[in-house]
Picture 1 (tube, helix red, strand yellow):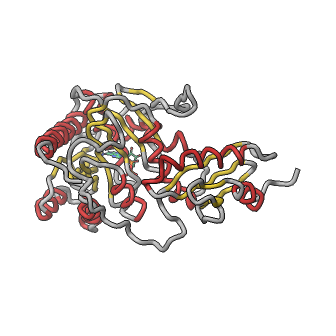
Picture 2: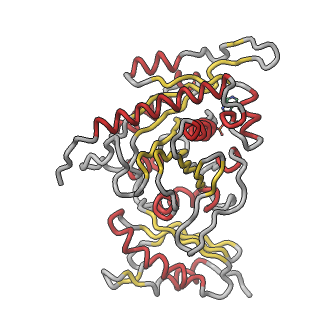
Picture 3: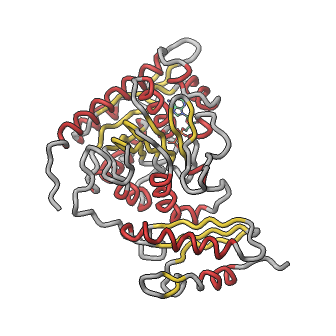
Length: 371
Ligand code: ADP
């Protein structure tokens, strides 16, 4: 049988009608990011956030139609609120002031606060901080979820030693994985590792919304979201669309100097998300043999920079082999050695974050929302 091609898939998708206009989704230009590889098909259907619910039926119809084609082994169709083909414009600021600190507006019922962990660039230890803070919050008695939204390099499953796929008993809702008292969901469970990068951008919003909407998080005090690194359009859109109670920015001493952290800060300020503070990671080097402390990158820059920017400083985590080794084993250092110096450093930061969320809620509570 000849390899299935894009044209054939598009011809099938051209049979799928969007009910409101009565026209098909291809003619309407709603299909984007079509990928066909070895009988595996993926595409996104572009919607506005308001349409997302009613378009779910269209998404399902499109998925079923393609799945029925001969030669198709799997289909992944997602709704995305990002116009992939449109000129790259930063999303507009929402006029509604949706990003008040406080309960995550209707989007994720049962979740009291969603906190993003972000960084100006990759490799600064954002995922390590996310995983350790989430476990620390559990140890402080909170009910916590961890959503790994780092679509470019979902590393949370590895750091928590989780493998396999989450179950979906009814084929619609997804049960989060559980480990260290955390409920965990990762882009890594939904998006195959070999998914081309270019396809990931447009998929991000659809997959993210799906993870917020379809995952059975239950009652959570905090949902920690490990964001993709950087401050581009994808990150900005996420920061804007997810009802965040606050953001934590992870930075190494050297990117404080390079202003990457400041870019992260600006991104959240732009979309009215309160920045709960900056964490300085790999702050100083503690020799695992002799215990000597060395400021290889000139530590302390984050505290000074945070002060200058009027942003809270949450604490510093040293660069230490044990932290990496623990993550590599699938056991965050906070779980492995909560009373050790590194465990304590994360716990202090988690405590500070929980306090700031409480204070934010107390402030937000009496507000009357005008519609
Ligand atoms: P990011 O999410 O920013 O890309 P990761 O959390 O994946 O970064 O960390 C990158 C690498 O650095 C990982 O191997 C991780 O184990 C290691 N790492 C992160 N923080 C520390 C630390 N404080 N000490 C030692 N290694 C660290």
